[in-house]
Image (cartoon, rainbow, N blue to C red; front, side, top):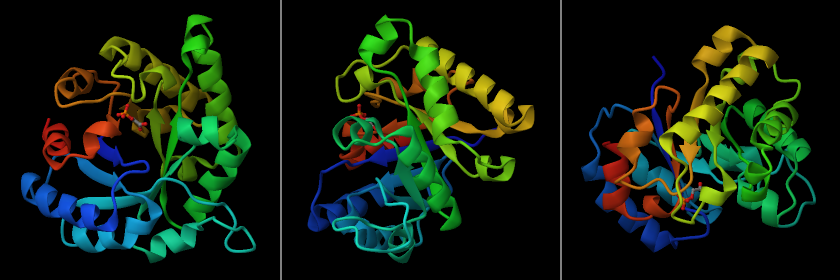
Length: 249
Ligand code: PGA
């Protein structure tokens, strides 16, 4: 059985004060031993505050991005080690907004995945097609390219330490969720890729999260699909009550 993961991606929302307030409200709403892994990814500047606020709870803190180099003259960047230093345990890599607005490629994703693993962080690797790609029946070929490029040259053991997130770009922040069947189809395909590139046992073990307009009222239907192992939640993770409702699906 794969343990579900519910992760919140705050994007560029919440100040430090708002971060504290979120955890104060959120912690009492989730059980001490929940039935899923819980992840919250605040902006960099609130990582340490979030880690301190989550201390002693089952909530794991993640960053939304990081650079692959250990250190250096890279103005405005944050390293994997800085994330662990601030209490982070995981890092989102290759979110579609990073690919779309900040020029991230499968190659940069690959470097970041390796750097995260080396720093003992859990990479949450995001893949997904745009609307135009889906309408041109390119979904599988895009997923294949992102999977093979982003995870190139990983060992089976390294692969076993990552989480995958399938996020169709057209479903992010639009209120349009993929139907549970559409999501399950993409997850099934990603699992097939995992079997081919790594091994059938790796494919059986990899946890694949769905992301794109996940809300309290659609989480149950998504999680009813055996292929869907969790959710990466944007907008609905900003409110303690709605995120708790998703976590407690
Ligand atoms: P959304 O974002 O839930 O607001 O659609 C999901 C994501 O981008 O991770």
